[in-house]
Image 1: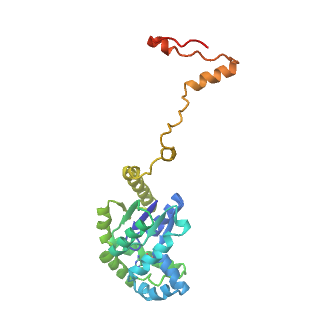
Image 2 (image 1 turned 90 degrees about the vertical axis):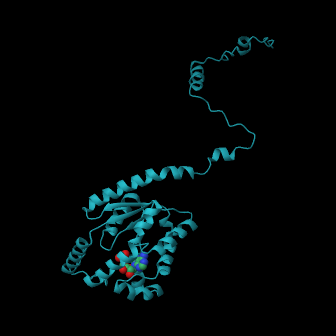
Length: 262
Ligand code: AMP
């Protein structure tokens, strides 16, 4: 299964992705996490994006597309993945379409977490306060001013993806303001529905069955032993009856001359 979780910062994409990882054995590919790891490790990409991320702006499309393409080719992503925080712009979505096509892959669903922005701001501010109260370190972009900038970036650059994926027919929307288990249940129902509606297309694309393809031309397929014949033979073997089963009198029934006995 290959999914996108779409929603503004703080909508609960990370939490829901973890639930899907546990339930379906998918890998969570969070571009935010990958970029933060690059910044921490001081890689060339990390140095390029550190300042952009701290401001709450979006990193260049080509950088993000490149790290996603590397990541989806790794063995753990073969079973399926959840894209969390990617794509974030229409050009990134177009690059993703081309990338998936190059690798013979397709998206199963795009799940939008619908949220109310003012409630979201309160939610994130209380998360920041709780992290501080626990004495834990805050992320560089975890402050109210940067949060407003990240929300503005979402509204301007990421929200148009909702219409993009609606046109593609892969979009399902769930209420991201509901309690966490309820959101998870809504996502599961949406995935079941996406699977159900995608089936006819998958069946049409199914490759030809191998047995037919492998049988040499002109050779009839082996006859299956029917369920009716097998018990009669088994019974004769069991009872030690060595007589040959009576031959059918087809010729006589058809009124044809009988073959002379040998
Ligand atoms: P996140 O953890 O998804 O909220 O991302 C944190 C920051 O990483 C964002 O504010 C951006 O600066 C950067 N980032 C993550 N994903 C992307 C992306 N797909 N495109 C551009 N920038 C991104």
